[in-house]
Image (cartoon, rainbow, N blue to C red):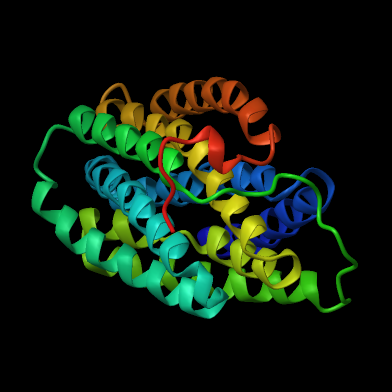
Length: 265
């Protein structure tokens, strides 16, 4: 019950807050916000309480793999985005699923190596994404816009995290990492402000993602011993430091095509 209340409380706040941040500071900042482990972190904490710290340590590995699959999601969205938001979302979801299945083959690799490879993939993807816009939304939003984002996002989070614990620790981590918030924000940004704004959400999320990768390292290595509280305290401190360093890059806004070596088209 506590976990369900957390989802029903935190998810609307996060979706609503990130949406309002996008209107004020631009889609990249919204992406940076939802890349933080504001839901997956608390979910993993309650999973540790319900299923034990060993389960949580294994789920942290699955979560790291899921963060790697988010890279594939971003590439799939960008590659199909010229065909519209629906095609982009379908392609991104398919890319995530394919990558998540493939990445299970390396679930036995050392967690530190997996984290390093994910961060390198994130940095590489940031270099090939199409140009994006970083400014605030250009137009007025209908009254139903924010409630619709909240309802869609909350329903997806509750559904995915309800199914995940039935699948084992590794798969559980992968499933709960599906970028629900990024999906909601990028599609709505696409509908209101076009493809560059949607890419801005992806770019901001990828900028914030290394901090989330770092979050799960102490959880994996320390949650069994010395324990749950120290592991999460260290994880929060590390992620907060990395996130603050990354925030100015997200607030930097648009990325011009001529600043990149290559562009995904």
